[in-house]
Image 1 (cartoon, rainbow, N blue to C red):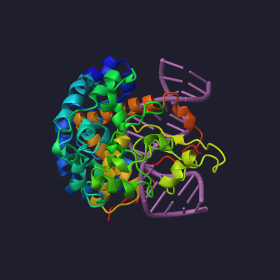
Image 2: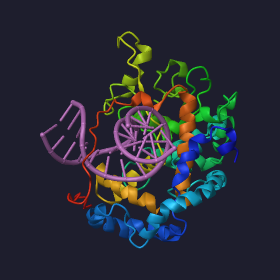
Image 3: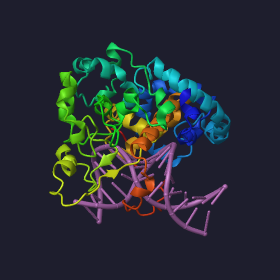
Image 4: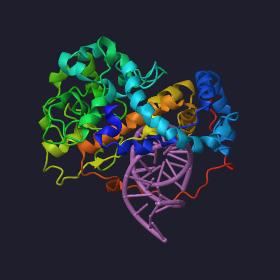
Length: 375
DNA sequence: CGGCCTTTGAAGCTG
DNA sequence: CAGCTTCAAAGGCCG
């Protein structure tokens, strides 16, 4: 509760939730959800094409009427949602956030003081499968909430974030900082950014930190392993983990290895110029959801193409219950808040025009069967 | 090798 | 202020 509105920065979240969906459809959706994996997938695979045509009501034929009403409901629900959020957000999180698969992953939420204080990271180490990428399980290692919560409570959540959020956090080590490094002055403690590590929310460049990262996790007391925060490059997290939101401006995401990222700092002149890293937009609720679920979908279905997967995820997203979605909205809101604190002056406008996308006049639709067949 | 595709949501831009 | 555009992730595909 504190969070939301109270803090005042809440505005961020305001929009998030607008989408609340159908109230009634929830049940249906839920059921569906459960069945999703099995039937759905199959369904998806085969039906993707068809559905694509019907984009308006994604795979929910029966309920599509609701889809239409969704907008209406959304408004109604919105308020509801706000309340929900307040309650939900916190409450859910407290409860362990997503049952099972849910959002165990969200780093920010999970990492909490426990780490700091206990250094219980070790817990991670033992449990965290360092990388088990594929296969359905939680690909995102860190996502494994258990690891985090494992010994302790993962609960503390960022709820506090809001409270102080706007107010610079004095000693809030526990709070935000834990998740996001302070931009500049505050780098004090390395909070285990386990968050980052764990967090798939923002990916770590492939070559990047993965390795080290995991190593870290597995080694437990590894804080020491991280270089001093101050020595890190701007794009890195205090812990040494590159901040997900920052990528080397060249944009070579594939390549940007960890080392590459750091150059600014250690080798200032080498790069000749600042090459200011690009700070990316914080992820929205759906993006967070995609991040978390993508691997799962990939595992379930043999699909690999992101476009196809995204379609599936889009449908699943709609199939989520309000509560489930709200979790993501909440997370997204927090992300934005953190992002804001981290990069106060940043604006999405900064990245405008960097990508030259041609106006998509391509109406996706029917004619082209997306050929999304899963197998 | 870089843009497209595809999704939703947030935010910027435009009229 | 409403509506449109761009960007965020991601990875195969294509020119």
